[in-house]
Image 1 (cartoon, rainbow, N blue to C red):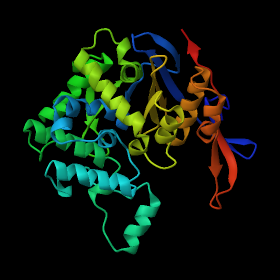
Image 2 (image 1 turned 45 degrees about the horizontal axis):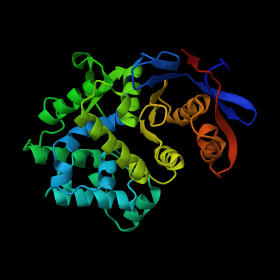
Image 3 (image 1 turned 60 degrees about the vertical axis):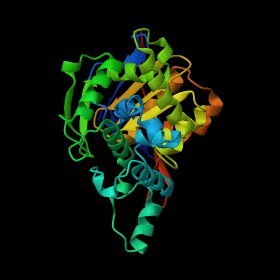
Image 4 (image 1 turned 45 degrees about the vertical axis):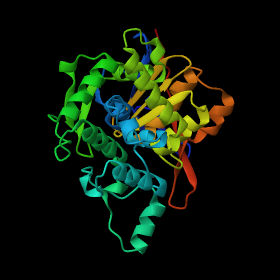
Length: 339
């Protein structure tokens, strides 16, 4: 076993497993600031792309017409835990656009909030799409479709006009050529987009600090600010209780905008420095993504020891057994290469 890997998993005092990671750190002006591994690795950033997928909702005028609250806009960007307030918010959005739960085509799964799942079992109720961690995103897509008069039955298809708008917006915000963006199908059934890490990090830099994006239109920069502010003002809607995105944005009090993705992806942007970061764990293990993400944060000296202490369990993540005892830890073991 190679014990020099960038993420090490200890059981007691012994390394039991390791993970490779790739990191890109990019300024909103396009400069690659630092990296680890391959900063141009082609990657599906999965749910980390949600803040860009929601831009057309904002620019369509739907926020104003349907009186979408900032916490609901934040939910459009979410991979939520399906806590009661998440489900209630999705239901409220559907009422505003006069659609039903059955219009959500995200499928369903056991919610991350286990208390909600236990209550469902006790009451003898079935899972619905409201419990999907992507129901917020899908309600946002439906909101944009209703606003623009698009078909709401085929909104998942890559050929659908709203999905084409999303590709346009991703290309614009990240600077990656539209014809080079490849798509496949995400876990919730909608298109997912494949880009080099560098460009996704650049997109997060522009989301966090659009004022540094000289070529961006004022409308687009205003849209990015609106999404950023909704996410950072209502971080509980983006993820949930004891979730990394929520806790990271809460600790930084609006400075950091953060969004995780499946298969070991985590992205964030820093308003103060104008940089964006993406972490990709090579084997897709999510347990390593927050560890790598926090290590990058500290190597870049973003924040201070007080904030880092609040987030320490994401940086040196405890490994727990069935008795909820800490019997190991997941720790970083790498240094960024600065440019």
